[in-house]
Amino acid sequence: MRDQPHTDEALLLSGEPEDFGRFYDRYVRSLLAYFQRRTRDPEVAADLTAETFAAALAARGRFRPRATPASVWLFAIAHHKLMDFHRRGSAEDRMRRRLGIARLPLGAEDAELIAWLGEEVALQLVSELPAEQRDAVRAHVLEDRDYGDIARQEMTSEATVRKRVSRGLSALRARAGGTR
Image (tube, rainbow, N blue to C red; front, side, top):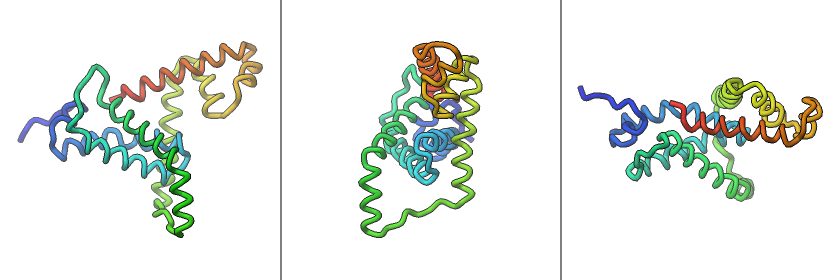
């Protein structure tokens, strides 16, 4: 029995299908949550997750370990897939409607799980922020309130609220890219 690689980098570099499967298992929930939060559509989140892992599998021969973790590499691919989706999404939807092609729907249970992951992971990460950043991110990002409204409630300046949100989001991005 061979030694099992444990780091993400080792899993990607091994070339073994089972090791890529382990890498997939480590990040599939995080990617689903990432896409769910950004698209608010479980079917799109599932499609983009599949596209991201397919691209990662195809590109893993070009992966080179760096100072940043392999998860950052994966989420960079995810970000590109999301940007591609936003660029092509409306055109594909129009074409699908014109041709009368329906999207293959996810099962209700799967859609519910993906939606829950988006909310649960986001809430967990936000709850770990310092109090001022946590409250500002919750209000602006999760509750969709504008900076002025939050500043009035907190009796502070809009610039302060923007700074708290910006710092909180930077911390969240760092955690999402650096989690193991």
